[in-house]
Amino acid sequence: MWMQDVLQKIKATETQAEQMVQAAKADVARRLEKAELESKAWLQSEVSLAQHKAELIIEQGTASAEAKAHEVALRSDAECTRMRQQASARLNAAVKLIRERVMTRDGRS
Image 1 (cartoon, one colour):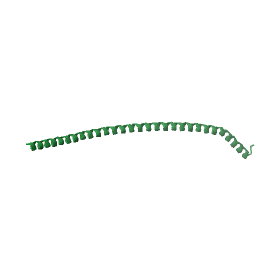
Image 2 (cartoon, one colour; image 1 turned 180 degrees about the vertical axis):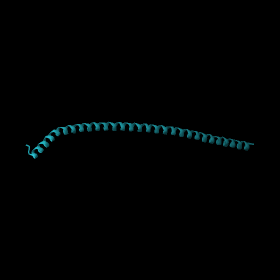
Image 3 (cartoon, one colour; image 1 turned 90 degrees about the horizontal axis):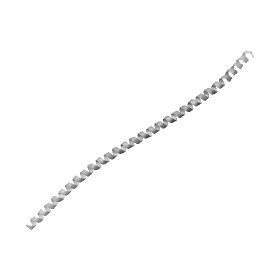
Image 4 (cartoon, rainbow, N blue to C red; image 1 turned 90 degrees about the vertical axis):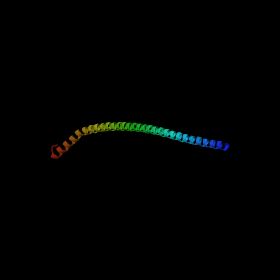
């Protein structure tokens, strides 16, 4: 009888150990699933944050480029105005010079 009690205790201990192993496996599976969900949520959050930062960089770059383009356009307009004024000022002198040369060549001087 004593041997039978020992065998039953061993069998009960083995059953209990098997149950503990199964419970541990189930706990590991739950923790793994939870970790995967958390990592997916974290990754999605990081991707969203990176996209937002990229959009801000693009907006800032666009604004900077537009400001520089506007500045270049203003400088070009100012340069065109200056060149027109210079050309206009020289036009009268050019007309006078051409008249003088035409008159001199025709002998009307």
